[in-house]
Structures are given as structure tokens and as C-alpha cells.
Image 1 (cartoon, one colour):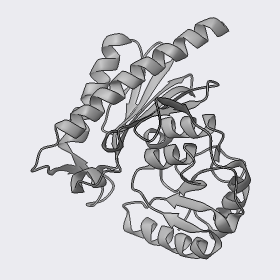
Image 2 (cartoon, one colour):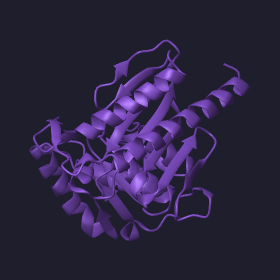
Image 3 (cartoon, helix red, strand yellow):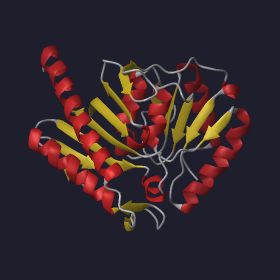
Image 4 (cartoon, helix red, strand yellow):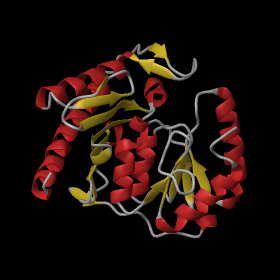
Length: 276
């Protein structure tokens, strides 16, 4: 594929992702029933799916399929197809389902598009903040919302010393895993400014991109949890990875400003953050 065609493809994928994320966000925000209930559970009885997760994923898949019928999908709530175009959409229709279930505002819609395994475009919609984050590979990351006048190009914060870094994390829903994660957080807490736990990996990665955090880590993320947010963070100047020398994976995802990334990654390696 020539570079002009690749540029045009990135633009097309971004625009479709923005529309899909916006419409799913509107559905989730405006269509949330007062008596919202759990529709199913996943890894454990506290890892829940609601009827709205399922409806939002269907909306996204239907919209994208109508525009690009040859593309594939990987969705948290079951959308899975190979496609024939080389493009695959990685979708988390509701990242932060427990927050959504309880009426907390920190939840998001995450839509990313890959070509042959490389993420080209990503969008994270955060409806209760009125914020949209988006990026294309090599084109920088941007956001719109009430915090900014129009559209703002994103850049991470200057790197502080590690003991002044504000770090976000998340916890798994499997009891044995989250117990170990709590021990890692307990050991890390005295070594940093503080730790935040927001409940949506995509929101945390966007907050890093916007300069609201210095770093983020989590064990057990799936591709749909991190695909769009990882691209947005990198395009804003963050460094992302997994264990030393590895890419982000289900074992460990680490993202931080350039000066915080290696110290944080080394601490997590020493603390055994990727295993019980």
C-alpha cells in the first residue's frame, strides 16, 4: 500500500471510529434504564455484563459493517470475525461496566482499527465528561471537550522523579489475582506520589495522554481494553510496553511518560506484578 493510500485509509478509519464511538456513547448515556441489571458474568460473579454493553457493541458492529463489510472484528462482548480486507476493528463497547452499573461517570467506549496487526486509528469516547480522545498512527493525539477550547493536541506531562509520580492502576475480578494486585499496589504506594484506581483502562490511558497522570499499569488487560488508549497515549508522547523488552500484553500493560516508564517498569518487574 502506498503512503497516500495509507494516509487516506487512516483518515477513513478514524472518521468511522469517531462516529461509531459517539453514537454508542449517546446510546449508553441517554438509553441507560433506571432499573439496569446484570445480563451475564464473565471471569467471575463480580465481572459483569449489562444489556447495554451488548446493545452498544451491536450498534458499533452494525455501523462499521455497513461502511466496510470486508473488515474483521474483535469485540469484548463476542463480536468476532476474520474479514478479508486486512483491517480488524477492536471494540470495547463499555469499558468500566461496573462504574456504569453503579452510576459512576468514569466509563468509556473504545474503538480501534488495526491493519495487519498494527493499530492505525483509535477513539475513546467518555460521555459523562463530554470528552472524545482520538489518534491516528504518526498523526498525534487530540481531544475535544469542555476542558479545552475546541480541539486540543495532546502531550504528556514532563516526567517527575519517581517519588513524585501519580500512577493509575486497575484490579482484576478474579479474587486470587486481585489479592496479589493489592499486594503490589501496597508495595508501590510508598515509592510514588499516590495511586489512582478509576475503573476504566481506556480512560486511564487517555488521562495519561492529557497530562492528568504520570503513569499507568495493569495486569490482565485484553486487546479491546487497551487498543485505542495505547495508541492515543503513544501519540501524545507516552512510552508503552509490558514486561521489560515486551509489548503490552495480557500479562502486563505499562504506560508512562518517558522518564517514568523505565523506573515504573523495573519496580513492577521486581514486585512480580505479572504473576501471583
